[in-house]
Image (cartoon, rainbow, N blue to C red; front, side, top):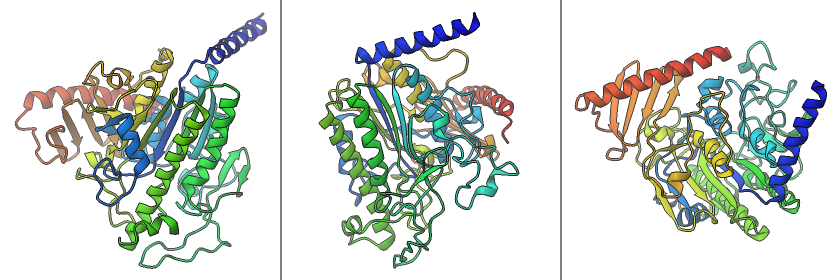
Length: 472
């Protein structure tokens, strides 16, 4: 009896999914993400030299989030928030290569797949290891005594098509060791020396074909056939496209470096790889238009955190005059470029000044599909559709951030930002003081007390979930 009941339930889900597809219900969803691209590393945000014409066009045509935040000041946690809509500390992803996308979570790929979508992930994964036998470059020891404790490839999280690395690769010739990248002359690459990270397409399956040249192009070469196949089948799709650019090793291709011949060598490489990535964003948009699905596709773009601190090899990333860099919960470490184009829904350009965060992707996408959020867990993100549609101007739902194992925390409202660390408490009026120069703790005691109470309540709740996961 139980078996028949389960089978009937499965059939019902399948029929509902097929009905959804047949009805042409969308939208398609694409989540693009850069790696370590600073808030100031775009033309539309005023960079003096960097050429990003396609991101600039997205800004002119769609929604520009002037205060868009990564859920963390570093890579893996932010990426976890995109898939779950939850602060990553809730499920143990507290640092780069720490934790994984736990099986107890409900990822966006699972939800959309149940509603008839096909799902794909291309580029960086960083939410768990991809092999039980093969380590990630030189960091295998970081996983402790159990080499498979973080095993969590996307194909075990309801991702149908994959072309992924666990973590970083060079931004040019991604599978080849570029050698030292510090100095005035570019080091010669040796085809005999692999970099150490592989592109996986399935269990134990790696590929080396068509992996020379610009890494963003290599990634897009895999994403576009996935999208074409979905369109041919008239099936809605989720495509997660996470570029490695401009994370180290920063290597710019000759064609793109030539665009910045008047700049110092480190800047040539940094600007070159971002412009090459921008070119692929344009290529993606052109293909969506050619396929006739651009109108009903939500195309999001952001970065996973602020720029690496200047002084790192070839890192000349811009925080746009904000304070702090990657790994910092100051504005420069967590405020990132944020864009959305969705022509059928967003017919005129709009700027959203309210704070938004990567945790908002999950509830926003479900809202667009008319799907209720699961009720068995707490979500930190909210649907951005009212802000996107101009139905409201403020967020009215604070954002919490945790850093350094929870020893640093932020409570972000529409106007005020409270920072709590072991060194004390700071309070900033972010719209008036984006550079965080004037600490208002002494001038706004009531605001400080109110926000501190809310932060401590939220933090205790999150840390309780973290403890239950068993992460350190």
